Structures are given as C-alpha cells and as structure tokens.
Amino acid sequence: RRAAALAEVSGPGSTQDGHPIALLANIGGAKDAELAGAEDLEGVGLFRTEFVFLSAAHAPTLEEQTAIYSRVFAPFDGRRVVVRTLDAGADKPLAFANLGEEENPALGRRGLRLSQAKPELLETQLQALAAAARATGADVRVMAPMVATIAEARWFADRVRANGLPKAGVMIEVPAAALRSAQVLAEVDFGSLGTNDLAQYTMAADRMEGELSELLDPWQPGVLDVIAAAATGAKHAGKPLGVCGESAGDPLLALVLVGLGVTSLSMATSKIRGVRLALKTHTLEHCERLAAAALAAEDPEGARAAVRAAATPEL
Ligand code: PEP
Ligand code: MG
Image (cartoon, rainbow, N blue to C red):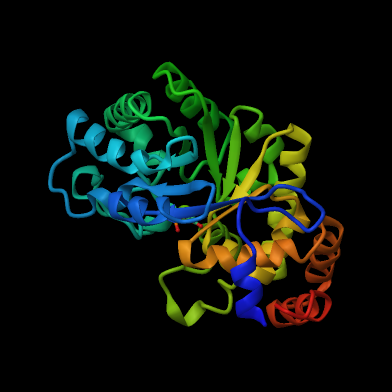
C-alpha cells in the first residue's frame, strides 16, 4: 500500500490542506545537481560548495568557480538553488583556507568566521556565483554557514547584495542565532536550519563522535525547543525558515518541523518522495498537534513514539 501511495503523489510539496512546503535537494557538486535536476523536486535547498574543493591545494580562481557553479545551476532553470558559501573548517577542512591548528575546531574559526578572516575568498566566491547566476535561469540565493550574531548576518548580506545577488540568507545552526532569529533574520531574506550542527551545539556533543549519537538525535526535545524558538522568531520577522539538516528527510520529523513553523525542507534526493507523501496525508493543524506531542515528550524515544501514534497510519 505504501509503495502505491508513494507512486501516486507528485509535484510541489504541500500539506493535505494545501499549505506549500517546498521540497528541495541537498547537493555537493555538478554530478549531484544533474541527478537532482532530473527529479520531481522544487530545486536545491543546500549546495555545500566546500565539497567541490575538498581536495584542492590552491584557492580556486574566479573563472574556475564560475564554470563549476554554471554547471550546477544549469539543470535548475526556473527553479531555486540555495548556495551555501564555503563552510570550511572543523569536519570540512580546506587546504587553501587553513588558519592553523585549533584546540576545538568545531568551536573555532569555521564557516562565516573563516570568511571574515579571509574576506578575499568570500569575495571571489560571490563574484563567481553572481556571474554564474546571470548566465542561467536558476533562482540563485546565497546563504552563510555558522552565523551567530546580528552583526555577522548584516556583514554577509551587505557583501551578497554588493555583488548584485538578489537574495541573502543565513544558516541557523548556532543556538544563539536560533534564539534570536527574529533579529538575525531581519537582516536577510531567509533562514535555513542546519539541524546537524544545531544538535551538536545545543547538546554540547561532537557530531564526529559516534558514541554520542543518542545526544545528537534531532528528536531530542531540547533541540526541538530551540527549533521551535527559531521558527517563532522567523514568523515575527516575516521571513521564510527552511530546514536543510538531515532531519528534514525523516518523514515523521518533517511533519513535526512543519508543525513548528518551518516553510521548506531540503534533504537527500532519495528522501523526497517519502516526505512528500507524509505532508500530503496531514493537514497543517495535524502537524501542529504532532509538534506539540513531540515537545511534550521527555526524550527522543518518547517523542518518536508520540508522533508515530498520532500520525496517519501509512507512515
Ligand atoms: C547542518 O549543520 O545541519 C548542515 C546542514 O550543514 P553541514 O551538515 O554541512 O554542517
Ligand atoms: Mg552545519
């Protein structure tokens, strides 16, 4: 039955009662873009640009970057592509963006902090993104990783706009930014929750440490509280807030995220059909009830069980 139901739903994501929730792909380069572009999805919600340069010894030139981004954007004519500027450092070190040894790389100069230390890297990337965006019909939007403060969001948005790119956003993956999302998002056009890092920083548990997987579970009620606060702030600011962490690909958790107020979901391409079906079989009000049930739980198992019991049975 589930297979038949999966095959039946297609097209833009929405709840049963017609609230649109864009379904988007997480990609890491041109090959992923080609595969995702052929799928029934609304675009890209996270292009991890650092993945393209993981083995590069030298900083890629403006021309090299423009060529790569043009290839990534090409399959998405008329669709959105959310590009994340280099998220180097910690679990994704880049040889050409190395600032030296750090005691705690996950808490160090990574993401936007590294862009502020090496502004020429960001500038070249934004120029290349603008040139590639002009050359295609994709709706290109650019966001920064690891934003913690209002000032950082403003600094980034100024640079994005100065390069003629129309839409600037920030990842919400640091608890401080999540708790102050109304003020942070006031500086930009959109936000995207990175639940992998948000769980790491909320639970003070290293995401690279397999032994801590229980603490890193995105169903942790403490993590859901922080997501709820971020979504409330986004609503106050009148700004869209998506999710691009792995949690968006879990159909039951996707319902909870939508119930908390999230407006788009980005995930591995293979997960999209399951999430589309979950949305199609639940109204927004039902999602809100599921979110309340998850928040009322004591632990991840309790949250999962409560949501599974109250969701429609096909899931
Ligand atoms: C995240 O932190 O949830 C995220 C989407 O980014 P990454 O996994 O690349 O850090
Ligand atoms: Mg992250």
